[in-house]
Image (cartoon, rainbow, N blue to C red; front, side, top):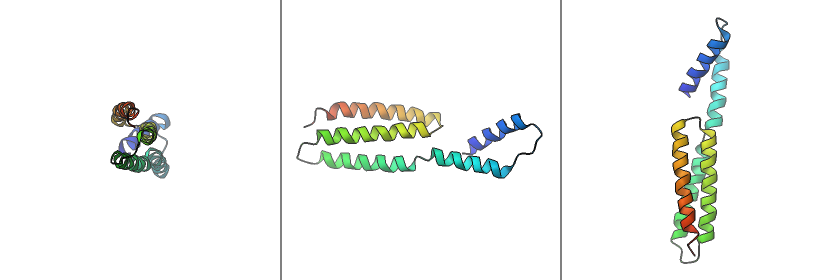
Length: 112
């Protein structure tokens, strides 16, 4: 958020020139962006999906469809994380994560 605040200040400075900028308004904009970029909820859900996935693997009954469903949900969480994050490194990690999820989905389709 500090990098976003700096970019915002620079951009406003370019647009406004010598006109004074309201620091409180900048703080509000940074807070709004921080809220939009918060991926805590998605990470909590992803961890829950992973825990369920592991518990399904320990069962003696057929779990292939359940695994596939959880992987679909995990993919949704990854998509949301990628959409919310302005960080290029996070976007790169999301691409890698989605690739691994797809690999697991292919394997889960062979599980009874």
